[in-house]
Image 1 (cartoon, rainbow, N blue to C red):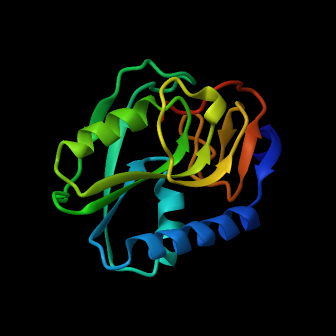
Image 2 (image 1 turned 120 degrees about the vertical axis):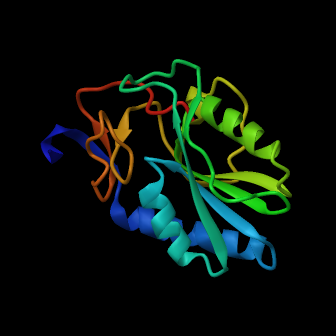
Length: 182
């Protein structure tokens, strides 16, 4: 499977070090506050698991799942909630944890939907950020790495449900373009 990867873009040690730094920032920023960390399934589960273990605060964890492009590599622009939150977020701080923010469409939709539920705040934390692929303005408060407009996999990111288990982020040789609609 690794031979289908054109090149490793971000290694496991770099990811681990940056995740620890982000966790320190979150711990500092949310100390004394009710924090709900919401992972966007399926891609963010690896990053969220590593991140939450390093956040030195009591947090609640929940998940949302969205569908916006199926197995294609570009967004349809239409976001459908596949799994909604189980927790009540009114009066709490919400940190939406994503694997990659690409076009911004999914994150714009999700942050708007969550804000309607009365949280104190809604912020975004993403392992990867593709600012060159934006279709809408969206602020990513906690960013792991900015990446070029290449199709990346690994560390939770997939292509047709494969490659999520790779311990690094790599460029898939056979596919060009965007990853997600986030």
